[in-house]
Image 1 (cartoon, rainbow, N blue to C red):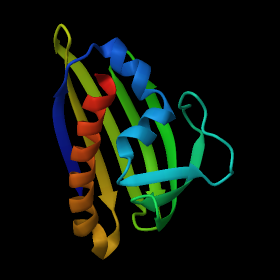
Image 2: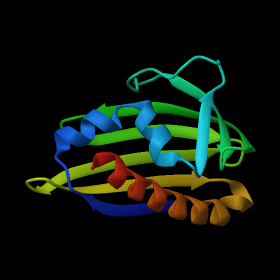
Image 3: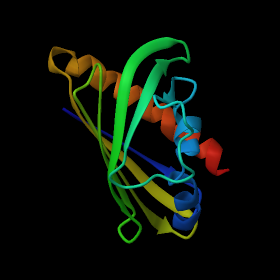
Image 4: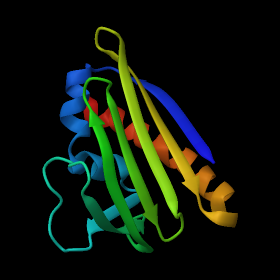
Length: 146
C-alpha cells in the first residue's frame, strides 16, 4: 500500500537540502510522535550516507517501545531533489520512503513524501498511522525551516 502526502514550504531548495541531509532534522520532525536512538549507542552522523544501515530503537511518544527500525538510504540526488530509503521494522517488513521536492517559484517548495508499506494484515492500520505521521512531519518541517 502506498501513502502520498504533499505540502508547500517557504524556502529554497538549497535551504531544504541543508536541513534534510541531517539525521538531527529527522529527529526534530518526527518528535514527539516517534523518537529513535541508534542501537549501537553511538550518535548518528552529521549527514546521512547512502548504503549505510542505520539500526534504531524506535519509541512512540518517547516511551512506548516499538522495536527496531532500520533505515538504509539508497539515493540522495541533489540534481533531481530526491531521497530514497529502504526501511523495515518490527511492525512493517517494508517501509520504503521517497522524498521529492522542487521549487515552484522563488522561495516556494512543493514537497512530497511517498511511503510504500507492507505489514501483512496490519497494513491498513499502519498506512493510516503513516498518513497522520507524515502530515505531522510536514508541519514540523515548516517549523524547522522558519
